[in-house]
Image (cartoon, rainbow, N blue to C red; front, side, top):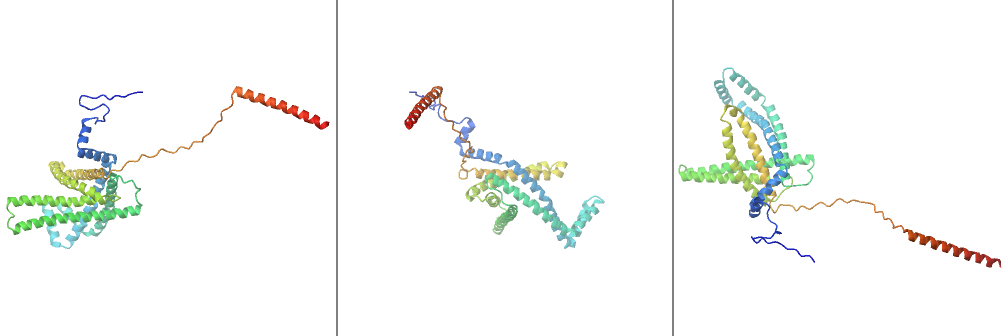
Length: 358
């Protein structure tokens, strides 16, 4: 009979007790929010969040060109129907530009106005192509963070779903902007009507109200992005909690990027390339932030999937059973018994033949 003993340490714990292997593991065990944050970071890395963010950033910048074309076309239609405004723009360019350059810029503007229809159509087609590419990468990235493992839909169905999702996102953004504008205008109008617009405490209240409205509008947009843009709909409860984190973080990110862009545009080179670099950095950080928040929502306890191990592959092998061969002694015994039986049979046969002759 064997016995086992467990040594007890001075602090009362035993050597067989499972303990965290490091201080960080102890912190994760003590603080569930930290453990959740680490699991979200692991999901983000495992599901290639940086690669998807790079693809989203690329299509975000690519979409600027057709959007600018649409803006130029819209400006061309406005200027073509307003000769006074066109004359003022031409005079301002001529006075501000160096000699000779003003005439060149005015010719470019005149050509843009004459070709506004073609520029607008090309801009719309380019915006549709780049917008669908942007939406497809965003939806694939969000679906990957949610660990949606179903096969992708057919090509036409996928493009149709991406187009509907892009329109829905546009509606959500328009609604967000409308809420912010209406709430801001209403608050200032009420303060003006009450004659309190110049009061310091009123300005503080208006600032706080503006922040609250902005957070609510951002929450609406992020709720749509996290809950409805993945290929498969997810629970609104988890998406709503993640959208709160996203709306607050986005406001902070906006302030940080405002300071960053202002710092990179101070030099002459920064004035030329700073806005483009700042836009690239901002788009990339926003993409990463959205994907990380989605990973945070997907790694909540209520959304974690139980990993079922795959069964081992079935291996079919032919079973061949080999009988045991008799030993030397058994073989000799069998031969001897056969010989005896043969002699007895021969004797019986001879006796039978003699009786038949008689």
